[in-house]
Image 1 (tube, one colour):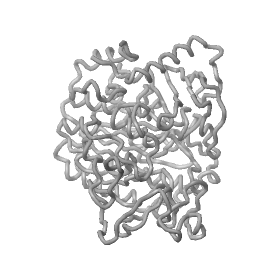
Image 2 (image 1 turned 135 degrees about the horizontal axis):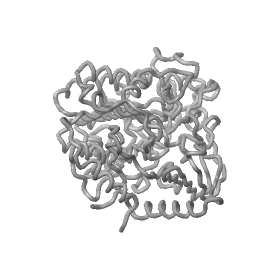
Image 3 (image 1 turned 90 degrees about the vertical axis):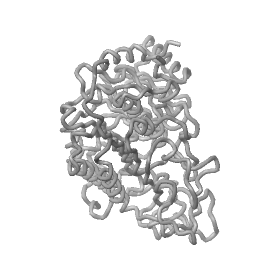
Image 4 (image 1 turned 60 degrees about the vertical axis):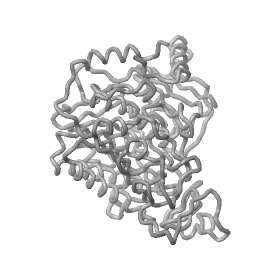
Amino acid sequence: MKLLGISFAISFLAVFASATFAETPNIVVIMADDLGYGDVSCYGATSLKTPNIDRLAAEGIRFTSGYCSASTCTPTRYSFLTGTYAFRGKRTGIAPPNAPAIIQPGTETIASILQNAGYATAVIGKWHLGLGGPEGPDWNGNLKPGPLEIGFDSCFLLPTTNDRVPQVYVENHRVLNLDPNDPLWVGNKKPSPDHPTGITHRDTLKMNWSHGHNSTIHNGISRIGFYTGGHAARFRDEDLADKWVEQSKQFIADNKDQPFFLFFSSHDIHVPRIPHERFQGATSLGYRGDAIIQLDWCVGELLDALEKNSLSEKTLVVFCSDNGPVLDDGYEDGAIEKLGSHRPAGQFTGGKYSVYEGGTRTPFITRWTGRISPAVSDEIVCTIDLAASAAALTEQELPEDACLDSFNVLGALLGTEGAKGRTSLVQQDNGASGTFGYRSGNWKLHRHDKRQARNVVVETKLANRPVERFQLFNLKDDPAERNNLIDQNPEVASRLKSELSEIIESGRSRPTE
């Protein structure tokens, strides 16, 4: 079958046929959580300053069309690691606390590709891709399969996401510091009538919930789901960023003499937004803005660690986000009330949960000191392409049945003269909902099979609104996607509908050899 993008792939063969690299660089991917296009100062924010992220952009390439592939966390992380659109997988919507491993052993991932190339590999931070076998995690035993079964040599994790239970670290296959005399239980139902929740003990909370996040209380914050026990293993929300920076610095130092891949998976700026006390009040935007400052500090600490170990010229750093912004996502933290003139999605419409540009177009920066010349690039690149691009960089051959939607955009990522990024990209919201965005050049098709659009305006609380099944926008003239041009451009709409359907139905978009 002739697949979309084959001409794009063929053009890349010519670009990279003579490309060689003097050495294999370390690769550090820093993935923010819920960070919008307009949330950092190098992308136009004026209500706060992000000097370390700005430094990264000033020393590398700042992409204006950098994307994640989905507007929620689990599907983006799935597609980033596997190089395959999440709507092709099973159980790829937002994972519940007791979700079993979503990426199964034997699946080729960016980690396994780099591991095969001789890299030491680690993921530190938020996981949210499930742990354990079909019955789910054995919280008091071995948490496998997990990251170590899909290409990571080590991991230090928040197992789910911090608005979901439990609040413990997982190191490799075990819950860290778990006391066997105080076993950890995680479930979907209230374990006892007197179990404190955000509903029964709302007056004890240090951060009130606005919707949904009203089950088990830990550290004065109620969460989604229930858990008991494991008290010695529980962490304090305020210390998450510090702990992950500490672990990352150690990994960098331990592996400075060999190639390494570090996936630094930040929880900032996801709810509950409880930055360390030294960052609280750092901005006028409330805890959401303060969490951005904490994230920027993390970036600076990682860059300094590379410099300290003389690795800046040996390391490709990629900064990105798992989806666009959201304000009230279940907690009353002042994000809406203190927004002022700040626009988290920049000029774009939508945010987290939506297929408007604000949901998937995010900050995206690459830096490799001495290799990448500082620039601003309009090329289309996506987190889903990092797997194929890493394979090209390390001269690893991708199996035909792996990384089904990942394209080699290495030249664009490195700023190679004449190199192009993607020509098209599918965007989704969550799981296999039938809601898609499809960008082809400057045209953008929306397909809403349920005829509902979510989170259309990020300055207000989440809301759905009825929409036509198909809409068509010209992003060059209308980046905010306000003017539906489908009636004026039936031929363009027909072509994009056909291309999107082919990509979905063919099971892959990366062409076969």
